[in-house]
Length: 512
Image 1: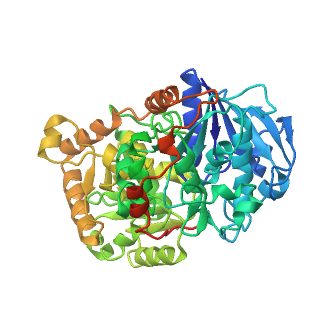
Image 2: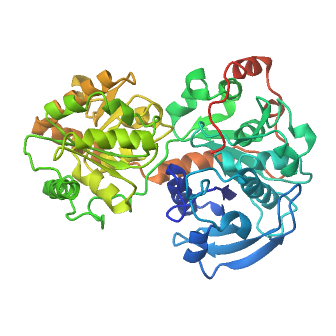
């Protein structure tokens, strides 16, 4: 089985969230499972610096419309997975993130940048590829790769089967309708049964419509995006394609996230020797300037500071948390107004609350190891990785019941404790009151050391390695028609019911 894994991000060199981590870890797990997988990613400046001996293997003429010439460089990762880097200096050798400039604004030419990535992914997956290696499956990840199945649709000859993975449906790659010509797509692609979405062009819509199979990053999220609350305008289309839709829970890199070997920790530990965790808690308090109080657990959070992550729910209950008493550390960056509000809350409780604006990988590991309870009150969470890191580090997570959080965290109650499944705390409504009640429950459990050790053990023995996900993806790949097989009719024609449901919601997400 040959698979081309197309992605706009690759950790640790270019990542904006979980997609970068997944794009590194999943191909490595697939490779270990015997899949002949290659990663296609833009040749960003950090990647070129990391692989200075990458060799040119193909040259591409202008790819239609306004898409410029480019070339392909090949290297190999430490895991043994071949890396194909799409080199177009004008598009990818920039500062900022994969999508945003140094000021935090979307690059104006994002549709062309990721249109080029999608076009080359499609070309390499067709019989027009200049490479001897031809994939059986093209695996596209999130909106920046969403046009690839559309390009393949309008190519002749033999072509790979296609899989579209949704990592966060809120980001949809929506651009003006006249972008179609610049992208080199034929006029017939701009239709309800195509790339058109509310009078604009959507990369995500293209992938969801034209790909033969669709996956999400957790089983619960696959169900949620078929509802109006989480579908962002695509609920009808996704419900109609539900037989082609599968939720596969992400894994974590168990070598990087291992408290027994983590190089970022001042003291290593495992379940049988948890004293090391107390040493990390002391180091965390010192790093954030918190007082050492034996009666206070430390609540920790590491995430993007956005409304999605639910951190604004803390603002109305900060004083209540302080009175429990509990301490709070928060690491992240994002919405400037929310950053300021959370920092102001911390300033009102010096020595008890602390907020670090920015991102520091080593500090993120220390928060996971040093906190007693990890907070993830997300309004929606396609999968989430931090709750799995927390479970592995003996830091029971406190989460809202949504997406991958609901698939991984089992609420602590009498029944789940008796069954040995309890590993954290779960609340339902996205309100400050519900969050506060859950925090109080968690702190009360923390004071019961025997109960707390049970929770820690239940989480630390779970297997969240990527091998489980790799097995599930191999099954998806194996079930696809290959070698130029035509896409089934159901994937090309939208039902009236799906059209009606989709039109009920206007799109809320923009280009990035």
